[in-house]
Amino acid sequence: MMINKRSKSHIVETQEGLTLLASRKEDHLDWQFPPAEFFLGETPDQEILLGPKGVLYTYSIVHVDRERGPYALAMVDFEPGVRAFGPMLYEEGKEPSLGATMQVVHHNLPDGSADYAFQEAAGATP
Image (cartoon, rainbow, N blue to C red; front, top):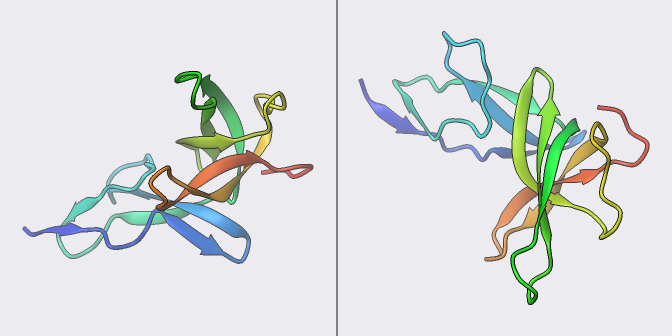
């Protein structure tokens, strides 16, 4: 059996907004994010889009040193029961509350490459 590499990005732009791609093996019940990078055979794993909104499960604010400001990492719950991890954008002193509705947004990594982050979605529900 041949091993193939996934060619799709785990970040997908839709009419509803930026979403994340999760996958699962055909014989498994649980979805995973990010999707597996490799799959066996000719058929990739089953896929589902998460978002564009989810619920904040937890987060942590990381203080590296005095030269660089703090940054946040969050875990956000999406239907159908997938918890995704990633950077969280917030205004200092205005951290979201646990259970807040979060939106997937465009974000660049420190090296400039495009990625995603979570940001509180004002007045929205997941």
